[in-house]
Each structure stands twice: as C-alpha cells, then as structure tokens.
Length: 209
View: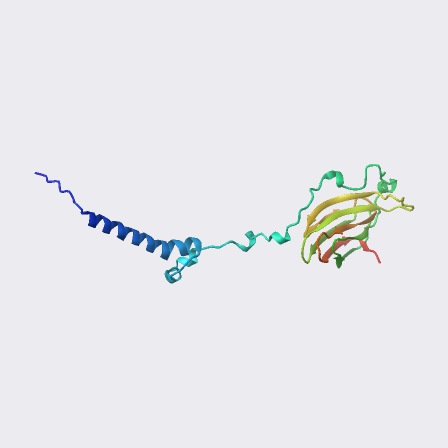
C-alpha cells in the first residue's frame, strides 16, 4: 500500500524560504554578476573571487573621439582633374624615354598651415614608377593626388589629371606616371592647427630644387 505524503508549509515557512532565495540572489548579484558583467564591485568580493577579471570594458579602439570628427563633403568623380573644357596637351602622347630617372628615395616634411592648402610635387618621366607613403602628425587632410603634363608653353588654365581625391591621415601606393611632368599632392588643412605631413618616396623621380 502506497501512502502519498504532502508537505504542508505554514505561511511563515514560505516567507522564510522566499527571503532566503532573495538573499542568495542578491549575494550572487553583488559578488558575481555586477563585477563580471558591469565592472561594479561594491564589496570587493568580485576581485577576491576573480569575477572582476571577466569584465571587459570598452576597447580603446572602439572609443570614438567626437572632437576629431569633421563634417566632410562627399567626394564625387566629377571633381577629378581639371575642368572638361581644359584640353589635354598633345605632349601627354609623347613616347616614353628609353632610360628612366635612376632609382632614389627621400623623406620630406611638409607643413600644411591651418585653414590653408599647399602643394608638393616631384618630376617623373612617362611610365616612371614611384612608390609613395605619406602620413600626418595629427588630424585629417583633404588631398588631390594629381599630375601635370610637361609643356614648353603651358596655358593659363593648366590641364591636370587626378589620381586620387580623399580625406585621410595616411596613404601609400604606387604611381606609374602616365606622362612626363610633375606629379604630387595638394594638401588642404581644414583644422585650426598646422599639420605636418611626412612624405616618403622611392622610385624613378627627381625632386624640384
């Protein structure tokens, strides 16, 4: 014969059980959950028990410095190069030389004044190959990486071909000069402080004296 026994709890016993469960939950929250999930350790038990080590705050790389953000205009391909009504010089179609400039390398510092723009260029023959790298000491600049065809009698409105338009603080690449002439960057500084741009070159080019 089987006898079913029912556990009869008084109201006092039920309240006592609930109170114990609440106390256990609160203890777990304070000693484990808060230190591990939120880095909050009011009693120091999280550090003592090792739960604080589980907390991972914001990675520095994920932190956005809103002070360094500028509102840049979108760059469109219509901005590339000189206006369409500026004819491309016939000298751009000249054949490449049999001998290029000898390989060389340089490091140049260019100061771009606040709220102003400045150009830096080098000379290259047609199909000359140049590796380049540039970086700012702080902040972002607008750049127009372009070239101008060598002409005996250049007109007032000079033709130029843009290779890259961008807002950046660092860039690297390789240029194969499409024509003989001067090639380089227009840097524009929209900030309130001067920016130093360090340019590194390696290849078949000559610096202007």
